[in-house]
Amino acid sequence: MTTRWIYNGRTENGIAAHLAEEINIHPLIASILVDRGIKTSQSAFKFFNPSLNDLHDPFLLKDMERAVIRIQRAIQQQERVLVYGDYDVDGTTSVALVYGFLRHFHANIEYYIPDRYKEGYGISKEGIEYAARQGVSLIITLDCGIKAVEMTKLARGYDIEMIICDHHLPGEKLPEAYAIIDPKQTECNYPYKELSGCGLGFKLIQAFCNFNHYDPDLLYDYLDLVVVSIAADIVPIDGENRILAYHGLLKLNTSPRPGLEALIEGSGIRDDINITSIVFGIGPRINASGRMDHAKIAVELLLTEDKQEAKKLAGMLDTKNNIRRNYDANITQEAIEMIEADERLKISKSTVLYKSDWHKGVIGIVASRCLDKYYRPTVILTESNGKATGSARSVHGFDLYEAISECSDLLDQYGGHMYAAGLTMDIAKIDAFRTRFEEVVSRKISAEQLIPQITIDARADLHEYNDSFYQTLCRMAPFGPGNNQPVFMSEGLRINGRPRILKEQHLKFSVQQEGADFMFDVIAFGQAQYADLVGSGMEFSMAYYLEENSFNGKTSLQLRAKDVKFD
Image (cartoon, rainbow, N blue to C red; front, side, top):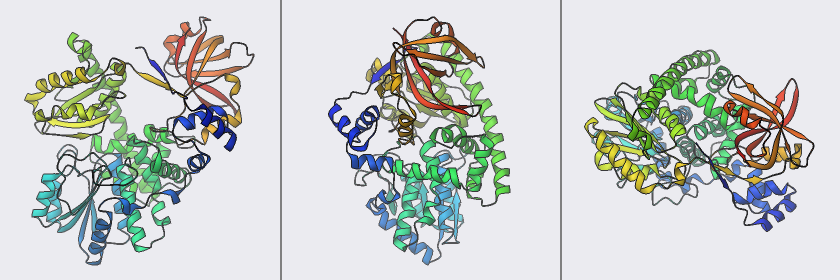
C-alpha cells in the first residue's frame, strides 16, 4: 500500500522566525508551533507551561448551575442517587471519578454499569428499572444519555430525574432531562467542545467544589483518571484537554491511585508513562473487563484504596485481556479471509462484514485492524440479542457518522463520532445496509482519502539535532490527536553498513546525509521485509520521529522511521 506524504505549509515564516527569536527556540520547532496555532510568546508560554488555573469556568456549560443545585438538594435531603456510566475506559473512569468523589459527601449513593451483552450501549430499560426498585430519585449519567429520549421518559414515569453528562453529538431531539451537560448541544457556549466523558465528569465535580468552596486539590487527586480517559477515548489533546492530560500524567507518574498503579506494574511499563503507554498498556486492560465480562470489576479496581485488592483485581483484568487478544487475533484473521475470498469486497470502497458468532467485545478492535490493512471505512457486525450490532471505523478526513446517518432508516440505533461509531439493526437488513453504505461511501469519499497519509511537520537536516533541540521538543508533550508528535523528513540519506533484522520483524540501521560525516541510528518497527531495499545503497528520503534510545546505560538520539521513499 502506498503512502501519501502531506507537508504542513509554512506560510507564516516571518511569524515563526520572530517567535523563535523571542522565546529562544530552534526555528524548526517555532515553525511547528506556528502551524499549530501558537504564534505569540504568550500563547507559547501557556503551551509549554499548562496551568490548572487556566481551566475554564465549569458554570459556562449550559445547565451546570442547575445540575449542581440539584445534586446539592439530593445530598441535603438524603435522596438515593445513582451514578450511571458506560462500560468502556471513558465510562468507567467517569464513574470512578464522580461516584468516588461524591461518596465522601453523600452516603446514599451507588453506581451502575450496564452489561454490554444483556443491555447494550447507553441508558437501558434494565438500568432504569433497577434504579426504580432501589428507590433512586436522581440519576447522573456519564459518557452516555444524550440520545436516551425514551429512557429519560421512562425514568420520569418512575419519578426519577436525570442529569445527563455526555460528550457525544446530540440527535435531532434532546431528552427531557432535569439538566443536560454536553458542550456539543447547540445552545451551549462553552469555549472547549472536545472534553472526554470523564473530563466532563471532572467539570461537574469542579463546579460542585466551586459551589461549596471546597479545596480544588480534593478534585485534582482524580486527574490520573482523567488522563487515562483522554488517551483511551482518543480525544484531541489541545486546549483544556492538554492541561488536564499534562497534570494527569504528572499524577500518574508520581502518585497514581492503587488500581492504576497495579495496572502499570502488570503491563510492564518501565519508562515514564505517556499517552502511548496508556493507549497500549493501561487502556486495553480496563476495557477488557467490559469486553469479556462485566465492567464493574474495572470500576472496583479504580475505586479501591487497598493495594492488595488492587493487585488481585488487576490480575483478573490481565487474564481477561489475554483472552481478548486471542479473540481479537482469530476474528481478525477470519475477517481478512472473508475479504480476500470475495472479489466484490476486495475492490469495494468500504468494508461491511457480519458473522453471528463473533465476540461482541472485540469487534471494534477488529474494525480497526481491517482499517489498518485495507484503509477504507469499515463496519464489523455480530449477533447480539437477536439483532446485528457492530462497530465502525473511518479513514482520515472521512465523516463516518454522517455516512451512517444516511442509512439511518435501516438502523434501530446508532451513535458516535467522525471516526468511530456503533450501530444496531435487524439481521435481515444487513445486505441492504451494506449496499447503501457502499453507495454513500463511494459517492462521498475521494481517491486521496483511500490512501494512508503521513503528515510531515518539518523538513530537516540531520545536523540540526542536538540535546537542546530534543529537550525543547519533549516540552511539546503530551502528544496525541490535535498535538501529534512532530514528524520530520530528511532527504539525501544513505545507509551506512548493512541493516540488521531484529526479532524477524524490525530493522536497525545507520544513516548519513549527503555531505555530512556523522551518523544517526534508525529503528524501523515492523519493516523487516524492506531490508534488501534499504540496504541497496540507493539514496532515499525518510519520514521519522526524533527520540531517545537508552541501551547499556548509554542514551543517544535516534530516528524512528515511519516511511521511506527512494529518490
